[in-house]
Every structure is written in structure tokens, then in C-alpha cells.
Length: 396
Image 1 (cartoon, rainbow, N blue to C red):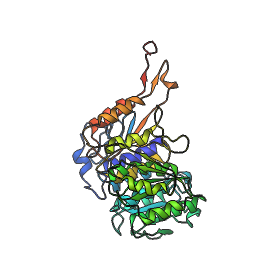
Image 2: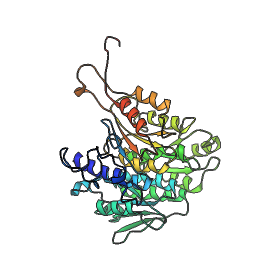
Image 3: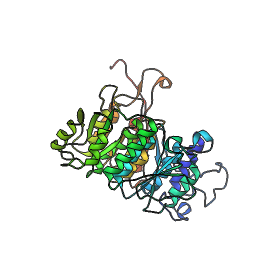
Image 4: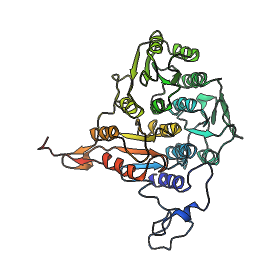
């Protein structure tokens, strides 16, 4: 199965990974000495064959979905989660959301949770880019009973594909669409969750980590401006019957008067860091007992990495956070540099072993985007920080 997954992701990597792409880019950019996909080492290397892509496609502790844009990254991530070579490896439903609306895209990550387990693809207004259309064709969703048999869940004004059973989720604003997405999830799951997440509608870099949690937990991502709580968000919270409310982001993104309004609707706590990088780490570490939070404070986890300048990559990465490795999102502010705070966090949760590494636990990182989002040098550094290390028991 891993070989099939690798082939899918390699094809995403070598395609240039945008909505279209230059058909000649593979042969032009490839070093002729590199091994290529589908050829043995002693065979003549076809000029038009895609290079294997190591170490940018993958290292021993990282795998990259190398989309040149989030449309391609989301398509590649969906194909990795759902190889679709067998019935059990195909999704029952796929979500389509307009790439112009990052808020609604983050909220739509909730539908990746059980029971729908629906990955997100992006449209460009009313059109499906080639990467999304091809992914939808290959994913071949079978239909989800919990969503009226829908093969496609269309959010807002996203493209509507032909020859698919479609359920529409409608709303006039990101706040109302988030509430509508949550209603669909409640109907599918049978009950509202006992917690909700409120994120800053004007700060995508602070809101990005919410996508991963929504995909894992099935809890909604609802929206507020810094100084005013939308009526749609207030009504959506009421539908959860005084849930625990968690605010993601510092006071500069969501002010205290909004917190006081939220406290009238349920017990409220803030999870935050002063900047997007530390905010994501704080959320990865956070735990409110067994009730809420990743609580990733020890080794043995999957992690997702994305660049703060590409908020939709957080949605693509949520597919991994909501299945398989179930891990939080970490952020980079510069494609060419790993923030010191992220390095320290990775060192803090780095796996170790006393005698036999086979008996240890392992960390793995999924990188979202091509080298313009996360450079190869940074990938190598992440790989080293995720590596299991011998522990000097005498020194300890």
C-alpha cells in the first residue's frame, strides 16, 4: 500500500503541482543522473520519466506533498489519504470549497472528521481546476448516507461537478457557512459536540491550526472579528447547548470584550501565542484534560508543517491530521528558515531509545507545499529533529 501511496505523491511532486503546469518541466528540470519512477537502476533513463524526487519528496522522517499551489496540495493530500485502489481506500464523499474563501475552507475541515471523513478539494470560483477535477475522478466517492447520499458536498459558491450526487451547504458569509457546515456535521454524527473552537476571521495565520483540530475532533471552527461576535456564530454555539468554548489566538486577534460575550454562552478558555508560530505550538501542546487539545508533549506523533503565507495548505494538511497519524499543524514564517521555537519544540518531543530503536516510538512530518513554501534545507533540518536518538542513560 505504501508503494501505491508513494507513486501518487511522486506524481503530485513531479507535475509541478499547480492547477495546470508545463508538460516539459519534468524532463527539463531533472538531473539526468537521478533515478526515475518505474525504471530499474541499470536501465536507460527515459527523458520524459518523472524523477523519484528524493530527498525533496521524502526523507526517512518526512513526506512532502509538493504542490506549487494549495489546489494541487489539497488534491495530492486527498489522494494520499484515499489511494482509491480498493473500495475501502476510497472516500464516500468529497468536499469542494472555493479557494478564495480561506475561512470557509478551514471550517470545512470539520467534515474530514467521523463519520463523513470527507477530504477537501478546491474550486476556482465556479470552475474546477485540473488538479481538483482529476483528483475527484480518481477518488470516485461512493456516497455518504449521513449526507443524503452525497458524493460531493458543495460549500457556498464552489463549483458543482457534473454527474455527481451533490449536497449544497449554503450561507451568505463565512460565519453563516461555518454554522451551516456544523449543522451538517451534527446531522451526520447524530449529536452536537460538547466543545467548539472560535478563530479570528481577520487573521489567517493565527486561525490555520484550527483546521487540523476540526478534522480530528469533528468540532466546528466558528468565526469572530476582533471586536464583534457575529450573530451566526452566537447561534451556532447555542446549538451545542452551552459547550466549552476555546478561543484560538491572542488578544490582538480576538479582544477581551468578545471573550466576555462568549462566556455568556459557555465556559471559555483562550489558547494563544504572541505570534502565529508560537500560537500553533501552544495549540499543539494544549490539553484541557481528556476533553480538548492535542496534548502533543511527548514523542510518537505525526506532525504537519505549512507556511503561514499559504493558509489553504492548512486545510490540505488537515486530511492527515484527521486520519492516519492524527497530528497538529506547525507553522513556518520563512520558507528558508526553521523558526527557533519550532526547533525547540521538536527537540522537546524528539524520540529516544535506551537499547533498541525498534522498541521506540517515532515522529513523522508531512510537509505541505513545494520548496517555495518549505525549502529542501529546512526539510532536512526537520528530518533530523524528528529522528529517534540514543539516550545516554548514565547521563540521565
